[in-house]
Image: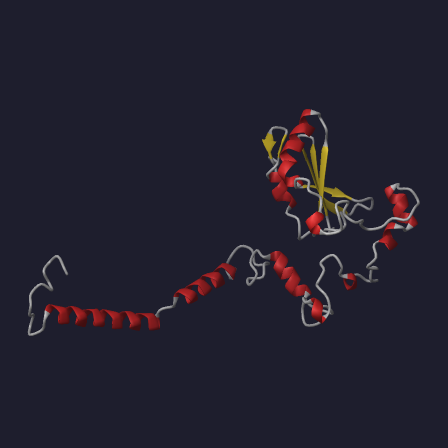
Length: 239
């Protein structure tokens, strides 16, 4: 009941206060329904907001696909898995997509078995390793499945402690990554690690380095006994 006494009177223009109240509520409800029919629903508003976030028209960076936005990894996978892709995403229909095994991306195609490369005499010579058979991986010493994997703490959990000890002992650290590595956010790890008493680099890495032929090979940066090397045209497994 309204505090103003609007519906207190037993009769208003021949109608009871209850009837007047119900009539006005009905009109309000009908108006609300009419408004809903012309205004976007909650789901439509969310969909429109998502579309706006992905729409980069008129923004500074026009090189990012407006549909994916910052989801670069998903964009890469979708572009790799297209209608001409020889594999599928389900084991039942051909085998899982493996980002580590895309042999047809190279010409000539690289063999899937890494031991062919590891046991090449030129590889052994470049790495200064004994001339013996090498293989790409071994079974976990705790069992050959993830449930029995190495129980050690993840490196990221003690990276700052490791860096602090390295600084105290005057031990230099080299961190390197491939410029085309779409899997590891190495700059995030560096900028969240404290070394030399300061968190992350104080200056943006920007010094170029070059190969023996004078071609641009990447970026190098040094601060407080930490050296960061970014290798141009190198991916994840090249490390």
